Length: 203
Image (cartoon, helix red, strand yellow):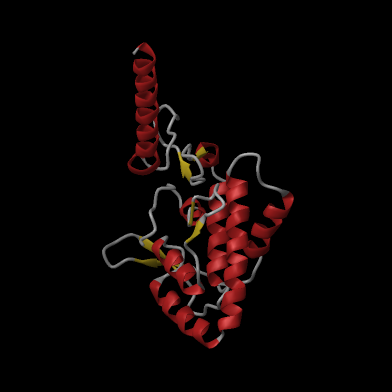
């Protein structure tokens, strides 16, 4: 299933790789290191060339890849708490800082053939490259004025985060097509139950 990009920022879309975060039967999307790479590629955090090399490296070092996946999930949860006002801890901040501090080859700006620029990732990449990219995305969000616009979906058990860019700052749902429509359906059902109960009581 394709990752729904509803967060408005790569860090939030990464956080939203858990469906129904607020429920016991939450559904994990990042079930493998390969899934982590696919997600990072979709979010533009890691280039396709780097992903292909890391896929090959992961097949050669599956235990290391699995260990880094577990660390990526811990980083994601720290990001989720830090992005949602008042829920992060110093330990969460330290985890993001740990990955920000990891050495990596320097990126560079390149000219695009059609004009403009792109950020070129270093040719050498190790299996921890996605975690460093995720930490950079988290830092970009956490140091931005947009952080105060981060909201948690009002859908029961959803737990997805998003940037509220609505003019009045009152967006409630990760998407109207999903949680918004479910909320409408619940209200309609409850209203019908009340009307039915009142009708029955008059008979």
